[in-house]
Image (cartoon, rainbow, N blue to C red; front, side, top):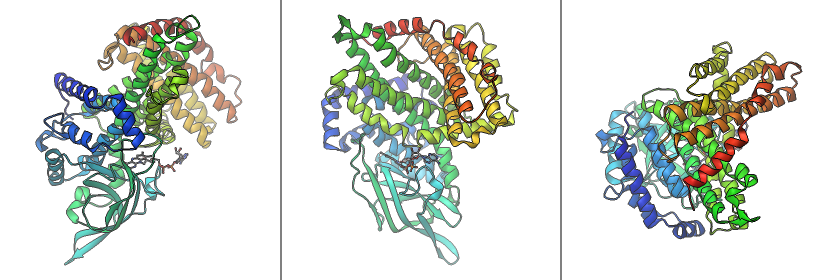
Length: 544
Ligand SMILES: Cc1cc2nc3c(=O)[nH]c(=O)nc-3n(C[C@H](O)[C@H](O)[C@H](O)COP(=O)(O)OP(=O)(O)OC[C@H]3O[C@@H](n4cnc5c(N)ncnc54)[C@H](O)[C@@H]3O)c2cc1C
């Protein structure tokens, strides 16, 4: 996939920020939240090519778009989420709704629909979820019955109900997953088709500036040319292919919203005087509520950028990496926002300081596009396969690749991340020998530990070889963050891994040695000093 040059991307980002500074001031955002209002005029502005033309970013150049790649979409999604996650969701839903056509459409369908989306700025919605088919999409019951003329399928009659559809009440075009005789398939449905009607907007916990509704389809007849890809039964595979991209977008949402909350907390802590000095200078505050979240968010960013760059280089099958990125970033964003409320004390619990709204908004990111538990399962299942296929060498070889980069990665936690990966490989092997993953909980915990160990490895590498340009932090600061994150990851893998293995019945007295718990604990040396450094640097980077 192509990628915008960095000047064009920077221009899109700065135009977006200028628009937000002008039109989406905090009081406007709070009012939209309070009134539970979808700001159609904002979406129109964002899609207006004379202003920003945001929808053009993800459309191919031959359809009138800018032909942006995964990296561009991640950057813009994270900036959108810094501004407002409800508005970002309205924009994302069009990306998401178009994706089945992008990954599975015929050339003719791509030309027609992407051309219309580009030229008419159409809002699109993605209709997969149903009341009884959420995490388990294969349980869908919406049906598409072929209508034949002279033995040829000319149309489909779609009937069923969709649930929790973003842009459901405001879109013009919908991609809808339905069971055709050949299996689940995507169909393009226009809003004004007889028999189609959206439900009432849901009264949601957060992202209240987004529109979420059910969809009712009662014998909705669409021409056979609206079957995405022209062949029945490819819908679930297409949905899986879509996840590689869309999970990265939601990861970017967690990252952007988490940083928006954290920056507010950092700035607030410099002005709030308690106990004789600013909170920003109190270790018990910064080392719990600020520094670990900044490290976790930046580890997530490194993983997102790594995955996006690989997608843009044309690598297929990055669904596991998309899941790791989403899991790390959305859990990090959610925790950072929760800590930001705590960091504001009583003020954090009121609307005025915005962190309360950000926390409600970012909460959705661990639910939509696959819940965190489904991410844990996906990651564990996929890496378990890699472990088996390589006879247990997958993570040990990764550790060896990190070690081979010494001394370059010594200052970015490379050796500690290698410890985490080795410990993880040993843990997976122990779980295999003792069949511990027959406990679903152990399997899911492995998913979490895999995400942390891989996050540490990628952050150690990229903070040296490809430090991000997105946040304006010095590479030396990113490397200190990578050291902190690697220590946490290694500690979690070895100690929590041991906990769950023993908890599931493992009795080998040598397991702590096999997981190198002593080595991992020794690697914690210098942790508090690094956190001291980061507390100072974050205050310098985000002054009040
Ligand atoms: C605001 C909002 C916007 C949305 N936008 C869209 C959209 O535009 N298009 C669309 O198609 N969908 C959309 N969704 C739907 C969203 O993707 C689903 O809500 C999500 O995938 C979870 O499905 P569910 O709600 O049915 O929960 P469930 O699948 O019922 O899950 C409930 C809980 O059980 C856990 N769980 C589920 N299965 C298992 C298992 N096998 N083992 C262990 N634990 C499990 C889950 O992790 C979760 O914690 C949206 C949802 C919301 C709330």
